[in-house]
Image (cartoon, rainbow, N blue to C red):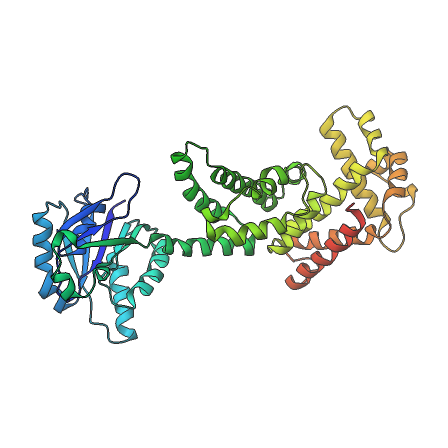
Length: 436
């Protein structure tokens, strides 16, 4: 991955000053008595540039004529080892020029570049343009943003006042604007999670933020540890719902893994995460550790996050699971079937077939019972008495719509909107019947 430094030359009369980075625990770093902020940033952030790395200096014809050679001489005098390339850009006069500048930079930036931006002398509209460009290039060219910096020379005062100062007193701070660009990544990650329930981007961003804190505190920062655990737990939960891992969801410890750690999180460490943590608390408020009722709560998650297919599967299998656990007579099958997996399959098949024969206009008589119903009739009769009558038509409708989805809408197809609305209605009815 090549490194790329991008900056702008203006046409002002640049005065020598001392550009200073903030204190970082290892003492302040500074570049003394330099005219160009590019010299400071290249020396402080890009001192080890090699032959494959580049420094692009965007300049209009007027800025190039006035300052480019002087910048090169200053860099050479400071012993900076890299190469500087001029990147001609037009004088901005309208929207067409802005698009042309966008195109120029898009063409100049290579696949996978690790980019450091200096926006000190950019046109006033360019920070906004580059905010968009950075996000665009992350998607189209897989670039990595190393930093965005602004040399605040104006903090020293008007030029005439600065000229009267001794150079050793002209300390101009370099402002690190990178965290503000990171808000775009947070926006994308948060939006993806809230809309679709997919936490991958959010998990990556949390890990990026908390790992340095954990290294610095040797793993003792409680908020960082809690956030890391929440992110990992949330990923497991979301993957379980996305891939319909019913048994894992029933056994998931939502309170221990996510809800209880949420109470220990101080959101000042990651302010952008605040709306996510609030939404997460709401989404998981009903979940309990290791409870089969979580299967129905997972259906609610699916409804909120647009996972309709997963919702139907979890709703139907959740019904079977809850009935299996609540009907004592189901244990009789275990006494007759030695293999645990075979017994589980027999119990679930019996309940599914029983719900099917109870449905329709007329329930089928016992004389027509087959397979597990015929093999364990006494269990089936006892289970029939436990099943709420209102649950039967719900299960029948769920079966119809789940089959519709599984067959790709080729057999008795329903509209997508109807599938979503029916899932919400059926989930409410089943929850009223089965949730304690």
